[in-house]
Image (cartoon, rainbow, N blue to C red; front, side, top):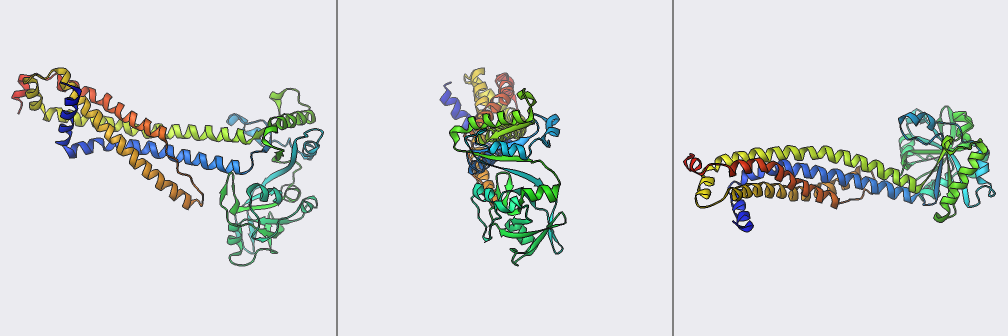
Length: 413
């Protein structure tokens, strides 16, 4: 029997039991939908994060204290106090790092902000308001930014996000009012417009104060949690990084790079880390989702065994008119593969639809421009795996059918 005739016979058998065929492929559909959705959401998250990182400027360089964390055992090194004012001054010296445009320190302040009994857990940063504005292309819709002079004088001034203003002041004006952070009053000089999550920051929930004020009055420290620097352009970034590392090693008396008490990250480094993390998570989640394909495969095998039993007399008649064991094997094996392949196609369509709807919902709920990413590789993988599952789990029922004795099969009632 030719492959064409075998295919027609297989389709005829499937059409004769439409409900059973539909139930057979249900597990495959669910598995493929899960794989497509997981990979799509993971790729969308990665594209969103990378896009936000790129928006911060390709020439941005981040310097952090402590040893670069390679695993859980290195996390204690992250909170090192190795970056201080002398390091910042040395980096800003053109003799040390000639291609560096500017650098500013940043410190994080844990806690809450309050005003007349109203309290809100905001992200309080000791930083430069001008850098914040330039980096994220955001400017106060009310009031102004605090200045470099305010930083030098360690003034108690703050720029707040839109949600901070809403939670503390409601519809009232915030500019000119004084909020309290760690029992110290800060005058609100500016309110940022609503922008939502950008990279590592939710700009609606941020409170930015001069880093000098945060160090002196809020934290009582003389070191920085990180230093952000800008190179002249992307082309000189490797040279700038090398100059930064050389300068800090000389200041800290370090000769062996393996003993660095700081580490430097560029946008490329951050993008690679994000890609690695999302890739691992995507693979892990897709592997878990693929388990449902195996469950679906077991369902295919069970249903095909039932089908073989019900069609015993049909098998006997086909063998009586000249069908070989190979023809019977091919027919039932092809039925299993066709069923799972159809399930794969339906799963891809439903998965793409669900992923698109999910990107819209996530974008609306999180107030982000969440990109929809259709994983072509995931779709091909889902289709290929579903067909392979049909092949693997269809072999036993097909062999069972092909080995039936034609005389006994004809007597079967």
